[in-house]
Every structure is written in structure tokens, then in C-alpha cells.
Length: 236
Image 1 (cartoon, rainbow, N blue to C red):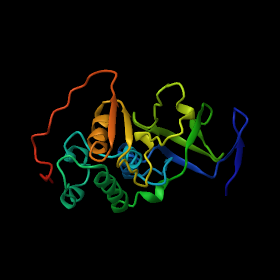
Image 2 (image 1 turned 45 degrees about the vertical axis):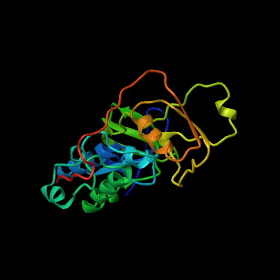
Image 3 (image 1 turned 90 degrees about the vertical axis):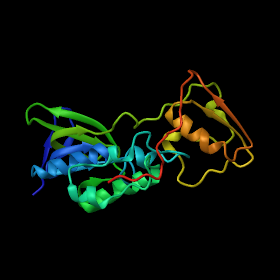
Image 4 (image 1 turned 30 degrees about the vertical axis):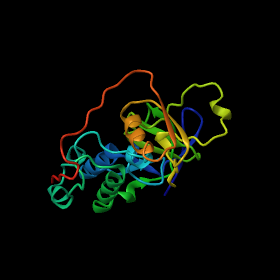
């Protein structure tokens, strides 16, 4: 039967909703941690902000988004059966294929039953007396867990440029971190891309195909070279 206890910082916790481990994020690392912790016999809950799994490959769906390392290096090696079943379509996989792969993994190993989507974690307090973590979600729900693992990666928060007037800009603007799911049309338009890192280069090459005029703003010069390995090459 569920009960409640008063925590040190004054909040009330539903002690009937406890887990051995809680994981923040259902991306590549979060899914792997869930699988491995289950193997240890632990009860686990994953808190994911998005509506689906994939992490970076769920959020980053900008034009041209793809691996800049060989596809097979992103595949999980904990299951020989999984390695035998999945063949990458491209040597440097595009975002849609990577997202399909991670959803395939989530379904194959029944990971979704322990993943709570649309659940942004906003606070975590460690309780010295019980040696547990009290975690709070954006909607006010609270849970306790023995172990807390962060699998948010380094790409989970967007960085907006501090340009005067950006908040009042009346034209269409998109950030590569949180790209719209609906297609964005650049045909015949004047387009500006800020940044020439890996993401910028990938975006530029696609936008340039249809844009009426493209301007690229670069702070620091960077180098890019063509890949000599055919993109259609496959590897188990």
C-alpha cells in the first residue's frame, strides 16, 4: 500500500512510487543503461522529455542530419542477435534511419514499459537519512530512487545566438536542435545559416539545393572534406 513521508525540504513524497534506479533521458545511452540495469534485476524508470525515444536522433531532424562517424560504431554490441538482424542502409546513416534503429531496439527488448515520455525532470534532492534521491518532474509528480543516472548527453540544450532583435524577428526561423517535424520549404527564399560546425555544414549542403539565396555566417573557419567511402556501403 502506498504511503507518504515528509522530506527534509518540506515536500511530500509518494513512497509507493519507488525505483531502484532512475535514468534521465531515453537516447542512445539511456536505452543502454535501462537494458543493463534490468539485467541486474533492478527496477528502473526512465524519464524522457520528448514524446519518443532517440535523444539527439529524436530532436535533431534538421535537413542533412546524419552520422559523421561510421554507422556501425553507433550500433549496440550487447546482443549478437541484434547485430545479426540490423543492416545499416548507409555507411554514414541519416537521422531517420538512426531514429528507426533506436525505436527498433526499444521494441525488440520491450524497453518502452519502463520509459515515461513527456516527463521533464526539474529537480533532484538526495536524502541522507534514506540514501535515496527525490526527483521532481515539471508537472509536479515526485518519485524516489536509490540510484540516479543522467543520460542527457552534451546536446540536450539549445544555444540561441545573442543577436539584438532576434526576439522580435518577424520572419521564419528554426533552430537545428528543435527542428519542426513538418517539412520547411526554402525554395526561392533568402536564407541565412549561422554556424559552420558539423551541424552547420550538413544543413548548408541541403538548404543550398533549393534556396533562392543563401548567406552563411561563420565565426571561426573550419575544414570539411568529402568522404571517400561509398555511402551505400553496408556493414553488419
